[in-house]
Each structure stands twice: as C-alpha cells, then as structure tokens.
Length: 301
Image (cartoon, rainbow, N blue to C red; front, top):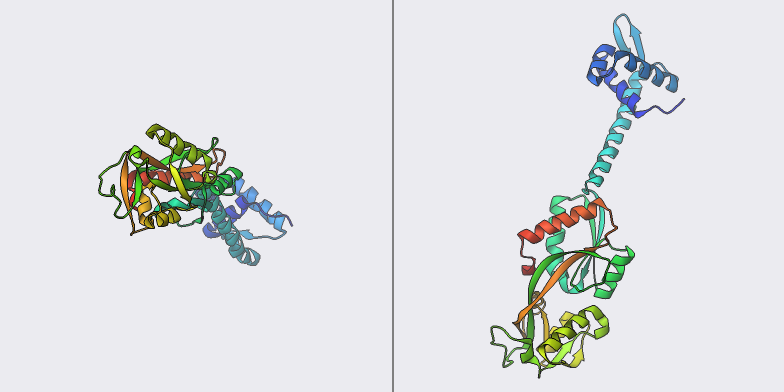
C-alpha cells in the first residue's frame, strides 16, 4: 500500500459525489481519461477497488463507501492547514513579542493591544514593560519583535515615530513659576534638579546635556531616581524640579505642576530589527501606524 496523493483524494471525493466519470471530469475541469488514470492509480496504491464500473454507472464499493469519510477528513484537514499558512503569510495569525518602555506602557499598551486584537484576534501577543537599556538589548538580540520607546537609541534599528508631545518642566505645587503658561529652560538654571542617573541610558543624557548647554547652565542635580514615578514623588516632596513629557502627568495627580518648556518636544517610537521578516510584525507595524495617524495616543493613560 502506498500513501495516496492529496490530488487523488480530491478526485475520489468528487467522483463519489457525482457517480459519473463524465460529470466528475467536467466538474474538476480535467480530461475524463486523466481522472480514470488517477482513480486507478489510487486503487492500486490502496490495494482495494473503490468503484464498481458497471452498466448502471459508477457506484462505490463497500470499501469505497467506508473510505469516503476518511478521505474527506484528510482533505478538510489539509485545506485547514493551507488556510493557516495563507493567513500566516498575510500576518493574520502567529505570535509577536511586544516590549514597552516603562514610561510609555500606560500610554501605549492599551490602544496598541486593543487595535491589534480588533483587527486580528488570532494573532497572539505577549507584552513586557522594562527599562530602556534592557529594551534595546532585547530588540537587538532578537528576544523581542517590536518595542515602543523614546529616542535617541542606537544605530541599526528600524523605527517609526508614533507621537510627538511637549516636554514640560515639572514643579512642586506652589512653586513661584507654577502659574506660568510656558517656561524657557534657562529660567530653571538656579533650581535644584532631580534626574535619572546618567548611566541609565547615556544617549538620553547626552541629548539632555546639549539642551542644558544651549540654555547656558549645568543643572544642580541634588538627587537621582531610576523611574518617572520616583522623580514625580521627589518633585512633589519639594526636593527639586525635573523635566518630563506631558503624558507623564497621568502617573501622578497631585503635588506637581507641569509647565510646557518653550520649543521642547519629544517623540515616541516603534522600533524593530530591519532583518525581521515576520509577516505578523509587518502587519502590526501597519496597524499601529494607522492607529497613530487617526488617534491622539498621547491622550491615553
């Protein structure tokens, strides 16, 4: 016994339904002779006669009748497998690993996951929130498929800007400058500052340093903190001021005031490895890009 070809099983099922080589060949759009040859080859491979070819037409044998359901099960399963592959090639099924910078998780995770699930509910997502250094290392090592973060990062990553929002001075409630509609960074030259450690992500701090130099001062950093939540707590406690994007306001409702800094803006980006050819990844990129053009993602949180 030899394993039947999938094509032979399809031909067999059509012939079993039509009970006529002529009608079956017409339905399959092949020559009747070709159909007869394939059915004969199937019977030889199985070592069993599937049809009686008598004067009254073409009828299933007892074995042929038993074989119908088995053949149909195989063909249906094959069709399902082909459909899964087709959907995977279109990026509609599969799995993706998403990583969010801790400070953008509250802002971006809900709308991104909601949009992807709405478009492709069979696309499985795993999410993780982490620090900037771990995020970049995970993307570069291929442990995560896409990340949502803030620049500047490192060379060699593909990226797309999703949001642009104001950078604000964060002052304790009651600060003399808290009622201003806008501030120049230079107006904060004499203030004590609370900031993240420089080694938390040197590319960010090089950018900050350039901005402070352009404003004509070096900040007096009186205390450091590893997270935005801790920075906000230190400002609320009156230890100093800091600078954060406006959406960080969603992380603390009392004790601090956000005042926009003149001509200061920050981006949020989606980043991935250029060599990642996953169809699901590129479908997600399209979905999130469309989301960013139709929704103000800075309002989430």
